[in-house]
Length: 394
Image (cartoon, rainbow, N blue to C red):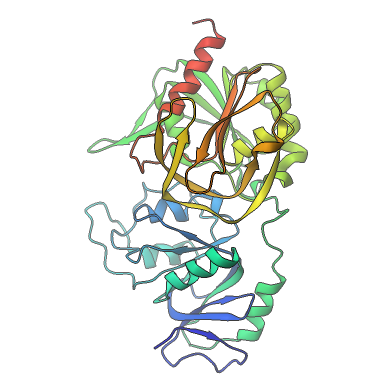
């Protein structure tokens, strides 16, 4: 039995199908429905991680995207209220290989299917995700619609039209959709077995984090280094940031086209750099720093999404196993001489980090707060604090 069919009629669904992934080119992957009974449109991407599906789905950087998991056993450890990176998932839907099984983990509070329903996220399982991965590998990330229809009725021409008409992520500013609406303080530190999340009692420094779609664990890592964190919206100006009198400024991860954020993010970051406040950026924050320095970014055909991405730190020669989620990258040839490339991907040679030689600022493309290595990249948060120390003459 094949679950891929290029369909042109509403009655083309197999008798057993209650869900489908419909691509803009007309390809249809049939399966069984999970999550909410609805449809959603977005860019179809794949993630190669074997664990952490709840963190992945709640990562705000997945706004506008339908996530196809290459690992077949998604949902086997259930879900819980602690392993989330944001309260409201920004992803559009999920595509799975195997059926969602009953959770087998002592921390599970709710099965994945129920959790998806509670967040109004549609999905399809029983799909050949290897075939989807090959299509993306060979042809780039397509637009698509994931639909969960318990009655087994599908209007494929209409769904294909929705996918064809979706504009895609190129040129789309999604940071403004996922950012916080108001400024708030953060003092929660990293999780520990038997203790849960900790709390920062006495802060050494004050960091302002610009929220372009910040993951909670990034904020925890900052707090874990002894930094009180004030989180401000993505559209905060340099004056908005600097009035908090920060010892350092952090630029967070986030979704969408970095160039589309430039009209508000670049002037703000430039204002921070002019005051020589130590600055650290991750993912979208890395790309925004590059744009501020006069560099360029480009859309990648496939992107990097997974927890097995090897990156070389050119300053130490060490190779880190990193977690990544990005569909755009910095064009290193466009960077000024005052920007030094510090990290490169060993998969495809794309830029993974930079530092300013004339200002206290650096950034990386990947996610050092995640734990695929498991702690290969946590040193970057200490590097940020060391930079603040140096700026204070310590």
